[in-house]
Length: 119
Image 1 (cartoon, one colour):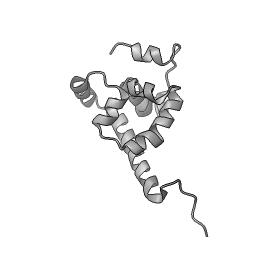
Image 2: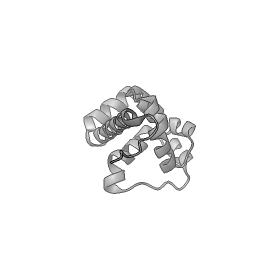
Image 3: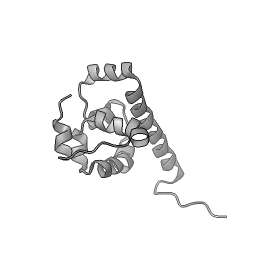
Image 4: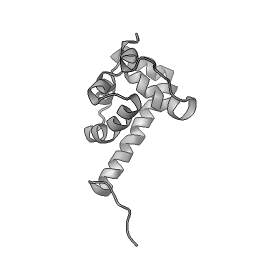
């Protein structure tokens, strides 16, 4: 019997990255479903960028750069520096609600249209 192939870093890294995925989904779901929490965050941080959201919740940078950013960059079709400036609520709502329940949104003019959208 052989064990399945694990990514570089082995089992411990896989467990850590899985933990952070669950944590990310938890915060996205909470933001979408808890109006009081959403209002509190918006009062405290205004319209957060995605980078501010990740930093404020102290996400592991290895998870952000190795796992989360590649996935989100592929979905948003933009480079990592553009993700830093992306409105957090757009990405949060996509993962917290739209990804599994209501489907995604379509933007006709790309990333610049989303970033220019008023709060």
